[in-house]
Length: 263
Ligand code: PXP
Image 1 (cartoon, rainbow, N blue to C red):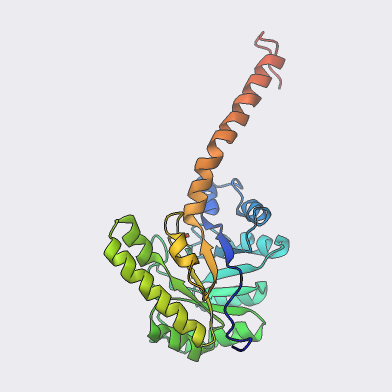
Image 2: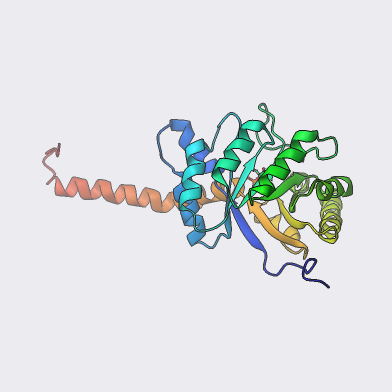
């Protein structure tokens, strides 16, 4: 086995901080800050941070990307649509990697993989320019042979296999379909690795669904966001409320109970 096609060793975890920005944007302002969340993720052992700058800026904003690039001590995976605007921003930012995804304004989250087979010449140009700038290029695709082969032809370094369908079937407890999807991803990972591509996977992964995917030896990295941000709210709510209560009690007791006000 050559060095190029050796199986990856440890499985890396990339944390997607988009939905910290979703909560921030619900109120405007700066809290909660996705960059602070990225630092916490790195402290907790994340191997990289992913942020998706959407055309409509519904979560991550341009200055989040600038700050992530300036402050992060781990690789930044800049998720983006293959458009002239995003290409220009990526070339200005020079992240460690760009993950090219399909994007529709009306969708809630990335639906389906990138159309690499019917892709026009702009995708090819985008990949070429990013690679020339020293940025690793990842294509987010359905776990099937044809898009994997097209990705290799286009010169991608990495394919990220879409695990969304697998996770949807798991949510529906449709175990027959779950098994079929796992097999589809197992085969796709093998095909991609044999084609010399680094293999990543992600979308919709939870504590319940991560095991089957993490066990696939060809996969080098998982990118996980929404579930972990939701879980962080659940795990973090108790200490956050306890701190607020403590601050309230402290303020009341130091005010001497006489209703005095500190202005
Ligand atoms: N990988 C890609 C390419 C994605 O678009 C997303 C969602 O932004 C993820 C991984 C993470 O998915 P989730 O937020 O469901 O964990």
